[in-house]
Length: 411
Image (tube, rainbow, N blue to C red; front, side):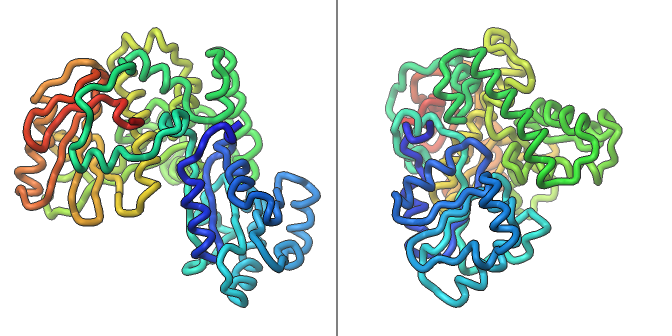
């Protein structure tokens, strides 16, 4: 169903195939990688899916013969199922430097797989396909970051209050779930998807001996989204040692179910926190795993705050994926001064983003950002601080600090 939407990554994948011999398109299952691949090659290449058992047997039995082709692009879907194809692809593209020879898709980050020892460095371009953003669903272009750094927002953006934003978060971004308008049916789809990941995909890529622990862990991690994880606390709850727990978490990250945001450390200030912040990669899956109800969440400040911050992360990171001049970080120091997101541009300019679930906002909500600018940056770098909130008006507090409707993410 993803062919109903124009994906932001389509043109960048086409462009990458003009420049690199191999392009790897990674992302969770059901995000639309197969549909995008068909659109990119438009019938001009050779498409082979390793979900087809005959194709998989062929790939495993004769990897050299499997990858042979003379022209066009060969698409190999779910490449992680036959890791032994990678060395053969490397040999093939070393003999022929023609760009656009292979488009590989995977539901796992192939660089994290032990069986794949060679990263195809210098020959490959990596692309990430995430669940649909609201902008993609509405047919909008990814312009938020340019507007934010230029402080160029309209005075009013109507139609998206807190209730609307929570509804979008519960919907999530998986194309099949998005197309389903019935709340309970969509929730059932999310749970079925979750169970498929646990029962099939994890068994194929990782040696998970305690399946019940992993199921519990998925729920626990969903509850830690938008937080700094306490590994010791989680390990004790599951009676797991830290080494095993970290291996489980890294497996789920490699499958694009969860993601870590690194701390911003470009300073010698000794009190800056060094921990990563943790996010679910789809709020629809997250709310279904947790068994949340939209009517209850809107009345619960902790849950609505966690949900909307996770939702903003998912929208924001998709913008950052589109342009390698941006990188995403977060900031927290030992005095608990915190900035939810820091976007760094390649010229050193910084954009700070604080997420507020409610409709009310004040200058006090920018205290941490003002302190950061004056004491960490010491006003030596261009800085813009914004608050994303559920209101509908842009409010300017200072020349470089303003409150902006969350809906600016999909203008």
